[in-house]
Length: 371
Image (cartoon, rainbow, N blue to C red; front, side, top):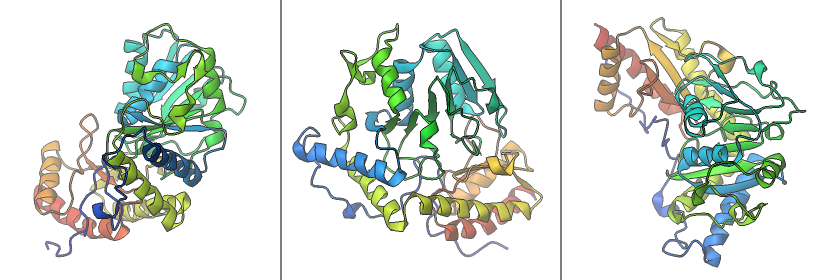
């Protein structure tokens, strides 16, 4: 039977992600709009977003947090172009974005001393192969494969190299062992449902030391430069951005941060996302036609939940189109490079009740396209 109850919010996209529950554009503080980002007000708003980020995420006091251009991609490329080349590099990748960083490192930066550790979609490479004397580049959560790193136990506390972590769909949804991460990048359009175009970069003291002691052999575009005269440009990490940010996006980010704080902080956001994954897990385990792409339960993402179906690629596309037409679920198709299937966002901005309302529609739509 065709279900009657639809999700109140059918937005299950993995980026940009659903806005927080109760979001209203009219609730944003718009005093900084139309003002220079270099005015006292503009810089204060940017500094507020940085301070709240550090406080809510529990980032160590001696780490720097900055807002940069180009979303998470811009943040990661800024880091790689500025820091890599001083040591050999171990790249761990198991889906399209991680593989994209390997391409940057080998094809664009043209580094030679690079170790590639690859796993198929649905699996993790052997993280124990990380060499503590090398730099390590990896995603914490594979957004396009639904496979996450379960913990940071594999990262040596005695490492000499840097750990460079793309955490765009993990931060605010998964515990981050900050003391083991030297560089973390993310975009607030992911887990917090913020507006796109801006990236966040988190640097440990070791990362700052690398920036101040190492000069790469290639030229750096202005938008990538974090040092001047061999010293860190501290203003970047106090609200003086390299390029002009959208103040509307920044106050939207602050609204999302305040929401996380209001529900009980990052731990509550993580619990909410994990509860959403539990709803999906119970559904998958009770059906024989749908499976997690991630093979190991402890590696299953609690944000970008990737699922495969006992159906042809054409049937999967038909199911996705049917749910869209019924206004039940938008943007839930697997990433273009991933195996055919579904990708359902389950981060904290998504309500469990909406996922529960979606599930009978998955049963119905599957029956419709495979009958």
